[in-house]
Length: 500
Ligand code: BES
Ligand code: MN
Ligand code: ZN
Image (cartoon, rainbow, N blue to C red; front, side):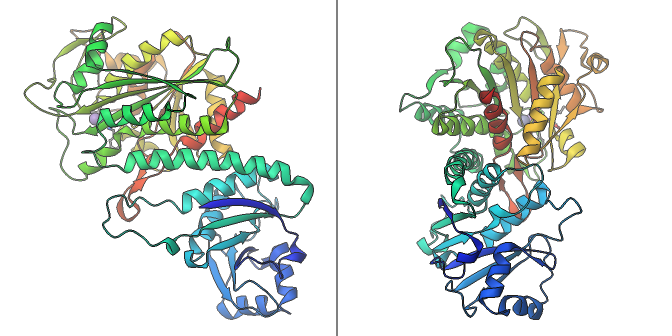
């Protein structure tokens, strides 16, 4: 979908050339745009809302065709719910309204003009509202139909959405904000595409090829380690995960230098398990197909790299993805096996299904060489995180309050929220092993925390945070598909870092 911004005052809407206009109604209160169209149509708009029993609930939409006095054939009215006492919409309602408005415009109409950027949103500026609308539009129009024989027709999707701003003087700000929003949306769609790929396509080698492609134009340098190189580095813990797979594990480093040469980079480390059967500790069959999404941490890192090179972000960022397939076989790792990590610590693998931490720990030791300003790992790490936080918030774990606060605030600003959980030492003893330095599971309680505590033992050399995206990376059921989270959170975090 093409996106654009244009200065169109409410008074000019009635004669605007777009075939479709999007205007908001908050409960019973018409927005400035809706008020202007109502006046131009001599009350026909309000009358139509009344006849339809439209009560302006958040996300409710009503298409009104051929209103008198209005050039556009379609006026799409979207409800926001009554404005709260603050007079401003919450970010969550704003997000819902924007998605609903784009989804409700029939694609065959071709082009639409949205006036939603003029809505009052808590803590927002015009620039952030434009960025938000751009990425929400891309989110709403996302499809994954690579494997459908019957392709959707060109007219199924809206060709162009233009975002109206009332004040011409803000056009430059709005245009820059639009580009940033498109970068986020593009990165998020990139991550969604990777997540949705079937696991017989998206092997570890597929992810490393996608990373290499990001480096084709020279803006990102890409380095891929295969199993032989990882063996030399002593990454036996990572290698233990792919021991049962016919597909070679890959450790991929993408380096983007947009900042000053001497500035320490922010390092992102993604879990890239291209399929998680559980290994010898085999998972139950129901819903196992969804374990193709166990590489969504890696996909989010690739999405972020794709976006920051588009945006030419002024920051040094290193993206590392630890890719392996967790399969049972005659060569697979067994429960009880003891392996040595790159850090020198030994691990007793009591459950081969707790494999994410096994690939991450070696990747987290590996990234010490970049002398990071901060390291954030992103992983679909524990089912326990889904139990705790559901599909709303990602789990955030960090031993560093300042870094945790930065990530939480970034997630709030872009409605891609995380919620902090503890990594206290009190939990560490749950990982004691009688035979090795550490066990890879911590028993039935506090599963997400013990997973984070395991990682904490490998991240002492730098400020570190861990995002458990097991609940947020994809949706199940009728809406099955990758969400591209937490690409918006990460990009907002990086943007804010680049700005200081
Ligand atoms: N990839 C899974 C975590 C997961 C499960 C994410 C369900 C989303 C939905 C991870 O590798 C895993 O299997 N974790 C185990 C850990 C346990 C064996 C300690 C889990 O959560 O059951
Ligand atoms: Mn697992
Ligand atoms: Zn897993």
